[in-house]
Image (cartoon, rainbow, N blue to C red):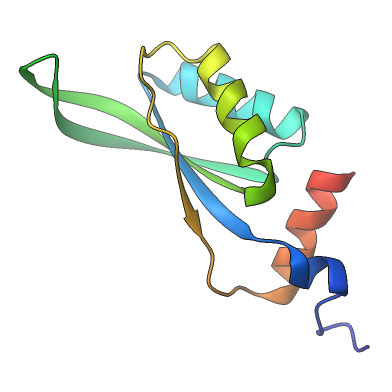
Length: 116
């Protein structure tokens, strides 16, 4: 197998992005740190966003922080449970998007980070 070919373990994984919003940069950083330290995420990118949504019948427009979490979706349930346990929102956004394809060296790096 050449270095650019995926291993059997990489081929059997379902890599994905999990999106979570947080109320502040500090909360987003805290969530990101926990997920990476506990190897539920290989990497978390953070960016400020503006969200428009309805909550309990009222229209809201808020500044939030978007977490873009790179992980193996086999860990989704554990990741979601951890986010719910440390998040300030009553109902946090936790949605997964499967990756259709990706750079094999980057996917190998994700696997390495999650498995230690």
